[in-house]
Amino acid sequence: MSVRPQNPALPILKSISYFRSLPARELARLATRCQTRALQPGQLLFEEGAPCTGLFMIATGHIDVRQVSYRGREQIFHTEGPGATLGEGPLFDGGGYIASAVASEPTTVLFLRRADLLDLCRRHPIVALRMLESLARRVRRFAEIIADLAFRPVSERLARYIDEAGKAQPGTRGAEVQLELTQAQLAARLGTVRELIARAFADLEREGIIARRGRRIVIRDPARLASIARGER
Image (tube, rainbow, N blue to C red; front, side):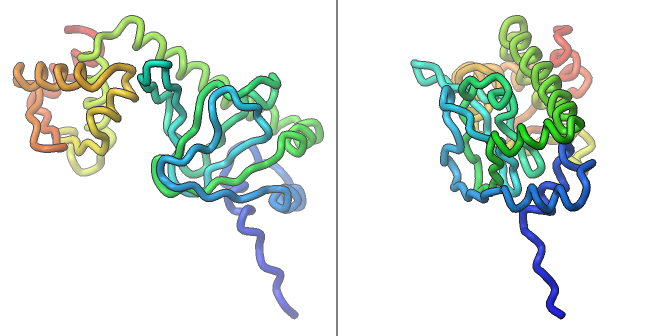
């Protein structure tokens, strides 16, 4: 007796919080509705303003969600990896995407049509409730970004980024940070331009708070760095 091979979309669906409570038969049915798409670094998944036709789920790789001004200035709102979903908001209000999504590395995504997802939400309201929870968290994150851009100088934003990165990188004990981003990429994440990022780095280094060795940042004064990150300069 031959064993029927598992749909490769199934383990990805199981990793997504929206769908974990669904019965096995419903998950298997949902997996047959999914389409797979592969992206290369820099390739567009969807563009700001374009009609939303369904939900994207990241299987592998990472996606930057960003906006670009008419003058070419870029703001990265967030970066999402495996198990994350994209495009929920426009699914419900019928509008276009509020930002563009671009692969930052080789990435594979699943796509579920809007009609299939809305049908699922009607039959399983818990899915809709969990999507609302996710959207609420993103609204909070966007509010934090707006507050940073409106009230925090670039030096504070950079200090917080370095402070948080030092705490997140295992094995460094917060003393060193290996930057994975160029200054231009970091500027896009912090809502500024490369020149101001370079100036903020130079200020922190001149004050003896950090030392730079290529992309490696040595944190010489963690307490002072944390103080600046909190806006207590």
